[in-house]
Figure: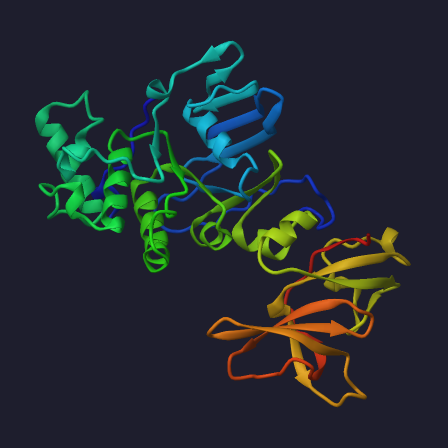
Length: 388
């Protein structure tokens, strides 16, 4: 199952109403671009603990060079899925394949140490009695001393720690320890690298700083990686694709932009970003809403069968803008405002009782109780769902 990776020198659309379609969009960038070759495949994977079902029928394919993130709330099954891939849990049903070889299911179970799968744990799990270089070299048991030293030096350079090989992990910052843990997992050139909440033990400032650094390292190494997080901003910022999990199942797999703009279920819409659902009536080639009439083409994939029907349109805060107006001409009233530093998010109650969110620059100030107009400024098609 080993697969030779490049050295460091060599590297220098489903309808919005569907709830179970999957897209294969992915973000590409120079170095480690995803291809159409699946390195990891999960087919019908189920994991039960007694009477509790933690993972229920997961199907997933991860391509060569792809960084895919499993995203979802606590208890949704994402960590159990990761542990099942690693071999730390055995699936109750289903099959796990790495490079086409069955590692779990169909009567087979390959133990973790034989899967050529690397793992970076939340707490980094570095050996305190070993130096940084010795930590990285720990899994290189099949190399001679010269080859090991060369590989360790290559990885220290890759993670930006060339001068830290003789240091103790205790002398490093949290971000540096994370890089060492990443280098140690990359050292044996795994087919798949797994990252379990990789930024959870870092403070907020360092967490943001390390996201793109970890992505850079993974892409430069050319490794296929799967990350687990409950942090949507983290998932959207580092991933080629994101798989959103809910109650043990995958709700949607898509590129970050597609996932945010066109979530395929109400759960995904609500979990990814701040969501408002604007009631609308489809009338011929237009839709009628409490904030105005718009072309039917604004709604992605809306077919003729919905003419005359009520639908709910997903609008994000940056799709809407509140405007100063008189009480007589107002479409709504500000009932809450949230200051985030660079911006305000205004909660506007419309005349029919619906509440929508409007994002504004911090210099544009409305007070709670102000009467406002509401304008739709989206420059993209909008997701929608049959009205409840």
